[in-house]
Image 1 (cartoon, rainbow, N blue to C red):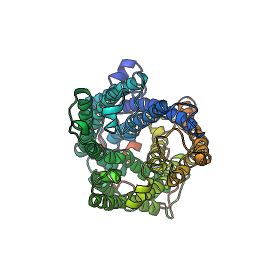
Image 2: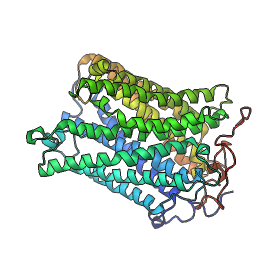
Image 3: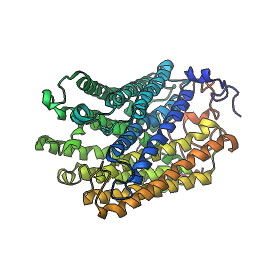
Image 4: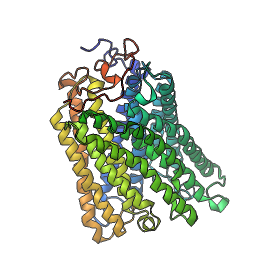
Length: 531
């Protein structure tokens, strides 16, 4: 039975939500915010995919096309992908998973959401004022010398959002170190907590570099200071070094929490102890550390030293090892498990397949000779989306479905959940696999017109995007309907381990009546146990 003081029902007034310091309510505020931006970024993608159905630029002109893919990239990367799992699932679950009643700094947590909203509003203002056309990477010298769009406003929006990311990471690090329940040692922590911890280290260490880089861009554009512009003594390659020093670790800000979610789901629906727990835990830290050393593989054709290119190529192969360790351990966990094909499990398995393909094509791009051929083609677009959309978004949806009963106290339609997972998987592959072929054949990205011989593959990609869009709308509909029509979930509908499943659904404001004590390992499943 739900407690009357659960976080959803305690007080419905707007002020109680906007001034809350309850980590669960702040997670819901993030959920609502980033869902809005997900559909905004998706709408831009729909428009430019429709443009690419035919070879000539007959739907929108080149300037509008540039603004559309820039809006898609900025919104999806900075306002959805980076904050989604840490800000929503991390905020909601981290204190409960470690037996705490809230995060270490509740007011700082609320401030991080307000900073996210403020930065998002500034970035959205740049879009409404006519947009920007630099791409989400804001590459110089174009962004400082030639672009006549709202570059400064958009950059400042991203700069403000970065502070939200830093505060969230700092809060998670302190909470994990100082607020674990008695008996909850580091090697009894859920793997999702390990993933959040590694992600938080990247957020705190890498995001300030992006902030400084964007401020330098604004200073050069507004004050004429020669930093990146070669005409006034700057170096345009300096921007790429600084930007990718943040942005490649940022890939792991997006994907590491998803790996943590998949670890939780795989072991639950296999009814087995996770295989190789310490290897999965330490591989998260290894990814976080090695992620800072591979930024140069984005610059193989930039004119950097061939020797530097060889070093970055080797390091890029090396960073694949801890990711492969996770995949092998998930596969070993599935082996001879009592597998239950619930919706979260389908999303987790989809993640493994799509992330593996994305990772393998990453090794292709880490190879110097091949990267020169496919650089700045649709091969890179496909690789990025297999990791970010096929991987991270599948994990995010898997996590939302896994913990939705805990968040709301309601069960969704399992049948519709399975349909949505299948539709998204099919639509995604139809959208992005043809782009590997397009890239190999030499179609460059960021072009609104292309030769006739590429039309068939582009039509396939656009058709897949329509299926993918329908697949994303399905969970939005049936999860909302479950709030009114769903059956009561009970405390633990999946019979999962973990402290969060010991609380009522939805949890009370303080999470636990008294601080729990942990006396067993993280995943004490019996191999013979049925869900």
